[in-house]
Image 1 (tube, one colour):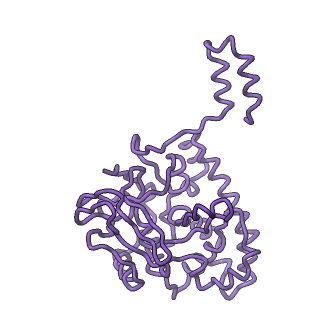
Image 2 (cartoon, helix red, strand yellow; image 1 turned 90 degrees about the horizontal axis):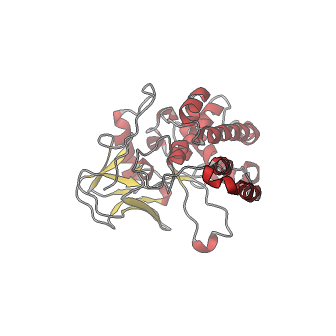
Length: 321
């Protein structure tokens, strides 16, 4: 049975989607050809976070819980901006590789006639994302010192600022018919980065392509991104040329939550990328990074190593600290 990792909401002031938003989204899913098994339901009650998938009947391993046609995905290739993004691909290259998707999201999140409006309405203004990048610097240092998260967030924020000012803003200025620096602000861009970080999927490369190809760009997968994560998950997303399918990996009992996996991630990585951590001892992938310099100091201070200190010091000189 998957461990239920409840994720406390730290900021109650964030706006929530209206009760009609989920119903509208599910109606949109049906219109787009998303097939949801009658044995499961999307719910905001009894789940680990804002949304989740619950079993309404017993499920066996191998059962398809839902399928999402590729035409429903939101990506740089399905966006109305796809031809323009392809044309200006060279100017949109970045270290993250996310700029084309982020520009698509900037456009769709503010377009009144967006094809994905019912989907995006589940996250009003994207202000309910509780990533550490939205905590104060003092709060990150006080609560997360020693985890590596504050340093990772500082790198993220610097990268976001640079990417927005050097790539995104110049692109928007060249296309004022599509973008407004006021409406498509740095703050919105930062929230969309967090949205992509927490909710996007990255299709794995084929084994023969792994050594030659760049990683696939991230893509938003409606419905699949509502599933919550635990290390001891009971479902997994499978890819085919026509659709993506969420499949039960083992029996799931009626009333239990269906959990996907976001990967083998330590708690500090989960907190950094998704804004939550699994309570001990649920995360079987949890780990802690220990700097080599710390190990050296501990080894040199240990009495049992007193006669070997010169040898240890010489050994650690060969390691890049």
